[in-house]
Amino acid sequence: MKTLLLTSLLLIASAAHADTTLGIDQLKALIPGNSVSGFADALGKNYTAYYSPDGVLIQMLENKLKRKGTWTISDDGQFCTQFPTQQKKCTKVTQAANGEYHRIKDDGMVTNTMKKFYKGNAFKL
Image 1 (cartoon, one colour):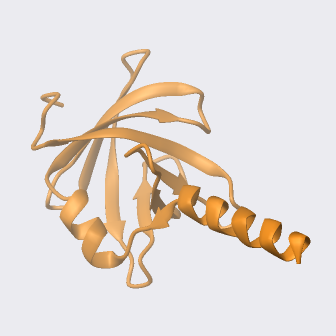
Image 2 (spheres, rainbow, N blue to C red):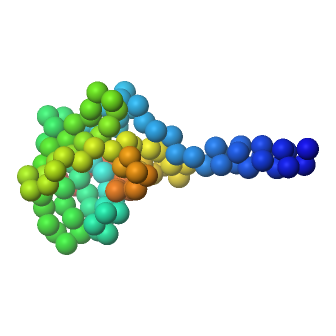
């Protein structure tokens, strides 16, 4: 009985801290026409980005490298980005309890931490 109670409490506690996966409608409300400041976990660099409503992505990395690509939201609810010299990368997006968003690959790897969203092209990229 004691073990069952402890297991139940652990499950409830872990569920309270679990990230929430965003659906298509939530992604469409969050991304198009907005900017983000974040950390590219895969690159180890801070960045800012603007996701224009027409699917153009403009990103500025902390080393002032500015690059232009495209973004889409797939029919299965994945957020996809592509830069000219790279393959298309599609991930699910989750929201953490602290308000940050994470791009997560199918294998569970976090590729980006989107720390804060802003209305419009906030960084004039």
